[in-house]
Image (cartoon, rainbow, N blue to C red; front, side, top):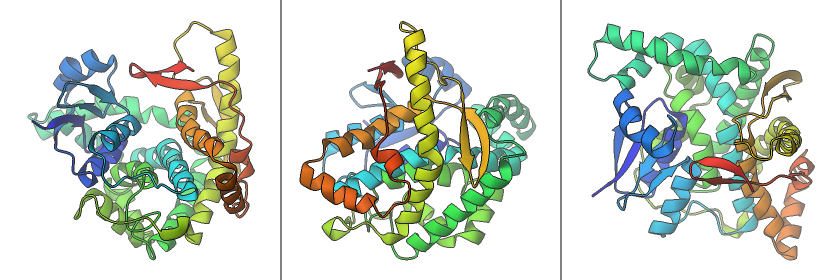
Length: 362
């Protein structure tokens, strides 16, 4: 009996999990997250309308792509998407945070400012597959408004859009150079970092037609990487580079993360401490306020999500668990990355945990 994977083609995080499940050769059935499926399965199991959700063969419900991936890494074993060596493992964990939690900004911008009409039809087709095209478009407009409404709180507005596009196009150029030499981030095997990037770069920025045209035109090697990731030809194959090597072509990508995402997350961490002190017995909200962020010299405000800090705990905990010799080698590598001290010196006074499908104070 296959595992049941509730997702959808439009969904950023479904794309991440699906690519992993295919590479890991997991026996699963994907079930479209229709309105009926949300009402009868997802919300009763998880408590809120969210995808992807995995119900395993033994009836365990998993929600959140990182937890789904980690479950099957343990359950199946075999070749892992987590490198064994310290520099590669840290880079892979950092890239997962960057893709999952930061590239949602260009992903949402390009979807709703370049592909809006097309997306409404797609939303309707997922929600009600049997409806007519006209009915699907009407359903999609209603359902899609919620997601379109996220753009302002993500910091996407007239002032920031030129900087968001400049940053994204520069990132595409950096990744295109990298993927002209390597199949994946760290060699011929995809890592957890590749799966962080594939969510936004596939479901929104490749699959949506207008943004897909931009990617294929500006960064054909990135488009080819997306195709390798989502159309797995050889499950469980490939190797990470020998001797804990990190390609020089990844340094600009890491520097972009350190410059753009890390200062914002440090602000969010401080806001979470203040929120926790003021609300000791409350459920953690999706945002603890609005915080400044800066992209390509342009400053805007976006919502400050505690969930991003839970994701950042993974590379932080790994970095701080290293032996003296490992940490010395990693620090020598990080010294070549401008702004890396924003990660090395990160202050997270309030820990988080993810239990029973929600964040709690750790």
